[in-house]
Image (cartoon, rainbow, N blue to C red; front, side):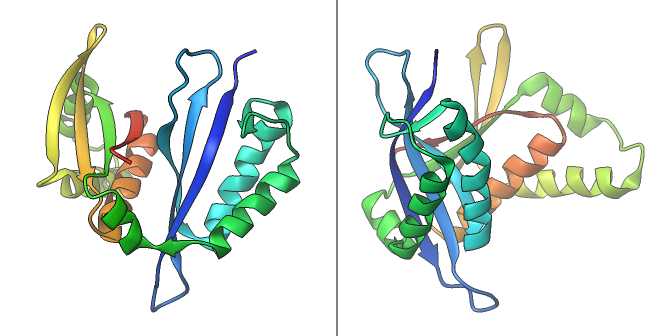
Length: 192
């Protein structure tokens, strides 16, 4: 049976004057059925502590089923959630992440043809479709973009350099909007 191995968890915080700390978390994972097993960073969740723990609860279902194994071992969902609570207590400032990973990026990919059709089609209902489309256009303005062929498709990739926490928020918001619209092909982290 194929499963995902979680090698390490990483958490960084940004003080938020309006509420509490905001966190940027990612994990390094690899599938058990590839050789060599090279851990790749993937965004776990960005947001407040309760949002990170909520994502840990969601992933806990995969931990229970054996599809996600921290340190390549069976563990309980409760232990997994507890490990995230501890990781958030030990979180380091986001500036340390930027210092340690100066060229870190989040890559968001869409199928070029489907995305262009989406942008060119006027919304049937101005709200919320129009808002989402306008917001997606705003988020991709000025972002580094390139194309890549993937089997029979051409992908458009948007690269967000992670220099500030605002860059993380923009990448996460774009990913969420593209997912809601059924346009997201994948999201990945690079150079971490």
